[in-house]
Length: 161
Image (cartoon, rainbow, N blue to C red; front, side, top):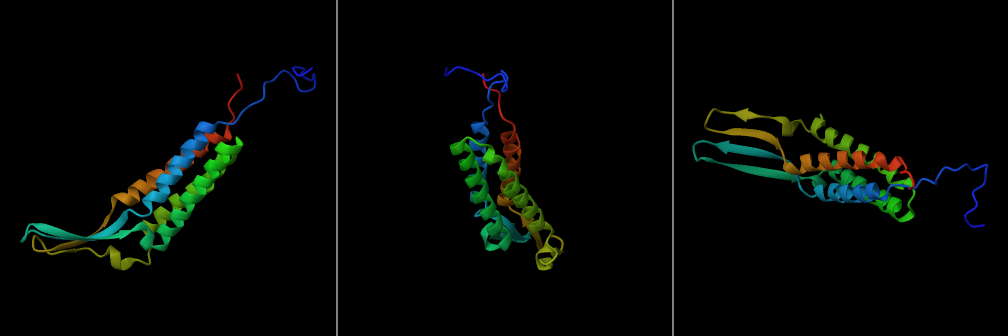
């Protein structure tokens, strides 16, 4: 009787969620949280007179946007772990913190309140001062987009074989 399938249920096999994507969401969320401590921006001063430059970096967690991105990364990890453990499509909820993190990263660059960081001074070869984006910002944006990309297929159940 254990193999009995009700005629009302049909002969369709039960679909199982994809746990591989949930684990990918966990990894991408961990990377997103890690990228919050990397340098996101800075001010670079260069002089051709001495042949070198000086850079002052700002880490992600030095700014409120970076703290929010860190929280979004930890939320994405929690969604991915929940999806992997319960085998339910909870990992798809990581779309929300991943999308919010991507929006926060764009807002970090386009923040009109930080006009002092946008000033560029160029005095020929003598002195050049300009704002720069750090590698941590690009890594955080890529990680946020990876969270979104891996959370979408977690919605789609795989077919049972």
